[in-house]
Amino acid sequence: TFLSEVKMKKVTIINDQDIIKDVMSHFFESNSFQVEIFDSGKDFIENIFSAAQTSLFISDIILPDISGIEIYDMIRGYGEDGEKKPFIFISARNISSDLSKRMKEDKMLFYFQKPIDPEEIVDFAERILK
Image (tube, rainbow, N blue to C red):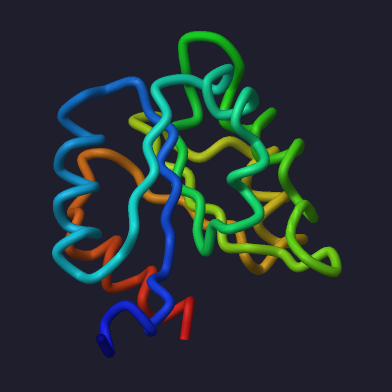
């Protein structure tokens, strides 16, 4: 069928809060994204091979084991030919000067402060993935 021939965009969500994971996956799946969810940085790292098929990463900054910043550092440039895939941080905290500096250096790094509007993030993701 036509739908099986269309390559779905894949979003990887790394977050330890069930409500965020549930709401974000619902909104992305409703907009024809394939969603992969990890509860911690360790879970993601154990499955890092899946990063190659990801179109977009969304991670909390503060996770129970390693930080979202450490995950970002590990996967940056992991894509084909060093391609930088969009990476969105979500956090309840104000943006740090370090993250602000990184965002100036990496035009595919973004930040949303909680509380988040999942519809806004999906719309944003669709725009940057065009």
